[in-house]
Amino acid sequence: MPLIKCAKRQGHYVVLCDYLEDNIGKQYVDVFHCVSTLDKEAVLDVARKENIDGIITNSEPAMPTCAYVGNQLGLLSNPYESIVTLSRKDLFRNFLRENGFNCPQSYDTKDYKEAAKKISGFQFPLMVKPVDSSGSRGVSRIHSVEELEPAFDTALGFSKVKRVMIEEYIERTHDYMIGGDMFVLDGEVAFWGLMNSMRDNAVSEFVPVGTSYPSFVSHDQFGVIQETVQAIIDLLNIRVGPFNLELMFDKNNQLFVIEMNPRNGGNKIPEVLEAATGVDLIKANIEASLGAENISLGYDGKEKYMSTYVLHSDRSGILRGITYNERIRKNILKVDMDKQVGERVETFDNAEKLLGIVFLEFTSLDEMKSRLEHIKELITIDVE
Image 1 (cartoon, one colour):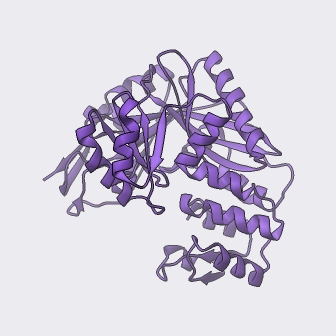
Image 2 (image 1 turned 90 degrees about the vertical axis):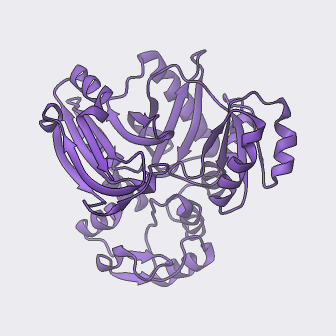
């Protein structure tokens, strides 16, 4: 929706593809085609008929289709094979390993019995993931081989290609995962929007419950991130577009690139980065896809201390209310709700099960850190 609305504000003619006839974006676009965004040839046919000038998506499964159509029509886009590599956890791990980047020991397969044999030399705990899911769907951490089969089955159920990756768990030394968005122009990172990605360990340590800006990485760590990520971009011949990052440093201060998705991040990351820096990544994505020059990605250095917090429940039931402590009320800019009081909500084990998102602004770094460390005491969710 942000891409569609921004494109229309810019005065563009917008063609929408989706396999669902009741797609909510239909009311805002100029023409709608009921074709699956996973069907490369069908989308290519639509693109030719409509004589498009650019193609974009913020849907992770549709990224390869977007690149394929762009390549076929000679539009400004990234190599199809590179986008497939970034979109699949197994292919990305293989790429990292083959090119000498830090990478945990891992194995991917579609067969549980094969997996049980291959991980005999792995060190627990292990991460079990679908190779092609987003939003932490189907992700588990296991501590023994007895836990493998149910975790494997769960991951398999979330995989479109029916393949599961098992890898050794990386223990990070910093409080938050390193996340956020960056933007590439002419093969170089032109904007860095690194953020702190928060987790609620009482529910799941793998599902983000908000992000804050600026990032807490040190100057030296940022230098390592810049060098490593740019090297990946060079090897994959990435030319343009937004990328969502998930990074961590292990106990030996070695950087691991967990994911580098060819899209803007979810949970309103572009929106909070625009509020913090003034840089509109949604608008930049549209302009870049059309080959525009002089895209504005610079900011004046007057960055704000901003955060989002994902409203979520640690159990399933009926939402009875949300209480905001007086200490946090003055920091709230707005609240976008997906669920209303009286509706049924589910345990927050993947990104789809959020209740809403709170936007917060702070007067200082110390205030931001203090508020976020106690956020569950300051914002309480009543579920019956």
